[in-house]
Image 1 (cartoon, helix red, strand yellow):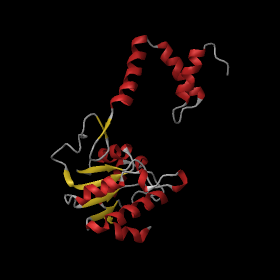
Image 2: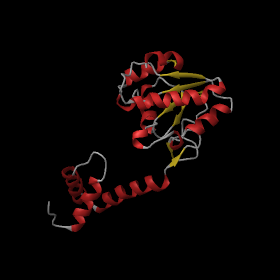
Image 3: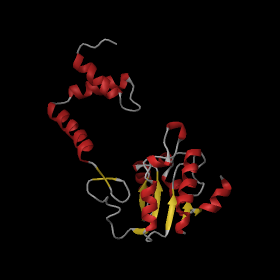
Length: 206
């Protein structure tokens, strides 16, 4: 496609670099921004710049936040003896929306996937083990996607935590095998958390 302006083409290229955005959608977005006033565009750009420059990661759970601790870790009314292990920030938001979990989280930043070159050292597993080793955690709930990669990560974490004799549970299989946690509806996800099972028992159904 030929563009009447190199500036427009550059904007389309940037929008099209975003996941899930094709060139036709990118063109619509670029033209939409062009129709808005300059102040709107500047605020939009400033928000993205601030996001990339100023966003922080909680020093305990690695959730995205604005301060040293995320609001969940900083909340004294949460049960800090219960840690829910998730793949990324999207799962934290999905579980919070269920209203069924009052513990805290630990964001791994991914799951073990040899095909994608992601190993245990690339994830926040060592920091999870360190949290458990301090002796204040009574239960670790593994809430990873019910895929082969998710189950592999569950088992690896289970073995790493075994020396600390902490209770390890896994979400009930109300979330179908092969499902991504972030796409589960709130009712199903909430019930899966409430009806969690001991990891050793859950392994029988893998």
